[in-house]
Length: 51
Image 1 (cartoon, rainbow, N blue to C red):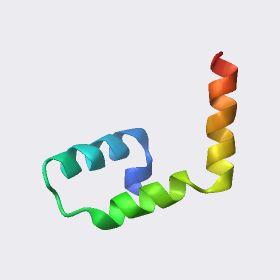
Image 2: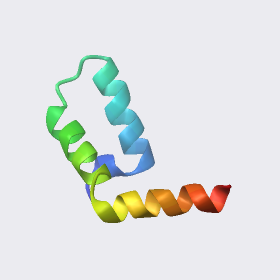
Image 3: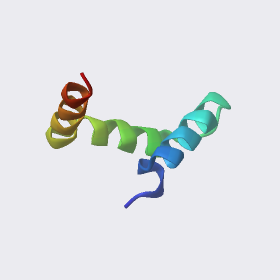
């Protein structure tokens, strides 16, 4: 697994982005991963189970 795909890694990547880090590759990979259909379905399932 890519290290920035865990919760702590995502938060670190975002904080680095806010601090003007050059992490376009990580952000692009993360955003691409989040739009994969299976991830979208898993996210939708999590939201409906919490309601």
